[in-house]
Length: 476
Image (cartoon, rainbow, N blue to C red; front, side, top):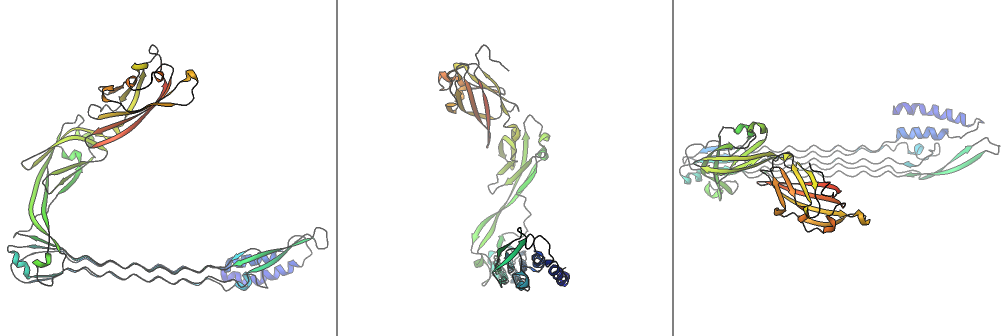
């Protein structure tokens, strides 16, 4: 398309030169139109260089288990070096070959300001690959002194070098920075014939930036040593299990954990010249525990089927039980003869915790009360505390706006619960009598804090209305 347009350009210029001499009214702008199109085709910014590919990380050393009997052992568990990152590509130069025509030369002028093509940016260098880690070594022994016959090299691999950034290129420079174009309207010789000269400018293209060098890969870590005073290999352990709560019904879960002690001085146990991390693990004992759930919640355990439970056996041989965030559980745990039982007294979905709503606003004066109902009917298990902000507006005297008359916790003795209905004795709070009489408009905000075990949540309940006379108060 680019070359095709260039071949047609002389024909366009010939046509424009011919028509520009015709005695016709209107603007004589054909050369500018042709040059605009020519400029649009010829103007190309420098192409950015491609970013270099990251180097691949080195492979980690092999992990090995060995049984020693005093015979010499020589092991190389070193990690491999990371590969170097690729260099970024240099950018291409912008197309500046048509400046004399496109940027205000004598043969052709454009009727708009021009920004010369910018230089391209160099590509960034690729990151060097990380060195592989040294392998881990587990040694089973009967005589600790036999480890002095083990020579091991478990060094980490070297990180690869980052690639170099590619070079950016300079932007094009204007050959002519200012020019004028005359535009005439009307018929020559007539009163409406007018010509104007407008100044246009050319701005140099900006230089492309050099690409940044890639970062070097990190050095691989030294391998680690673990020792076990045994002639038999350790069985695999299962210290953590996650499963659906419904799978715990009448089904004991076996947990096991190989307990280790962290020591220092690994190289002092091995042959001189060995290269391995100084910290090492020494096997202490194997822990095994069985877990059983006892379900005493009213709702069947199958109704909570997909809720996840995580069991974790600690180094103290305790079983930690963690339920899903959206399930509140209250229970007790008991350990006896390698058996841990967890008794679930209450299990409540989190969405049912904050389903409180205003049921009734009744009476006046010291008998004023607000009744709140638990729509989920879980208040026999959940502990609830209330905090209130009581604002009043007395229309009788034309007051505008609300005034805060009380803000704070509601004492427990002013809250009564009948199954799933709470009655808040607002009239017994330290609120002025003038704010408790019939006809007063009130704005009430109650914050209920609901808690069960270690879980808690807050719910805000709002109510607005007028205090009614006791004889006309409606009860739900």
